[in-house]
Image (cartoon, rainbow, N blue to C red; front, side, top):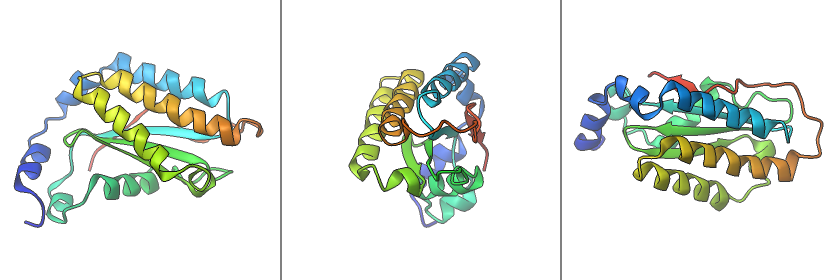
Length: 169
């Protein structure tokens, strides 16, 4: 095995039902509302996706949370927006790791350390067991960058779903 056996065990034994405990329906609705509210103020697109754990193929390859986030960014077509300003906030629950992947229209305008800071603040909230508040704070922080860089632009129609995506393998 190329990866860490402890990590593999956490991923392969992370039951899907735990997702509903961490992010119940009301939390998913609150996150949807936060994204919708943010996007009323800018022309950017924010999408949140959560995955409970990686499958054994990805674990054997030693895939990192960052690498998986890039795959999900592509899979969900977050890159496919009119102004190339889609941002994915990706949570890999088994690792409690957050990654932000931004399309070139917004990424070139925001310092990498800013994205990293948002991720680490979200992970801090997760360590306290407050997933909903951590995710909403992350959405709001991404929204601040969107307003700064795309707030004066014409707000396009909603190009990406506001509802979080639950990614499975």
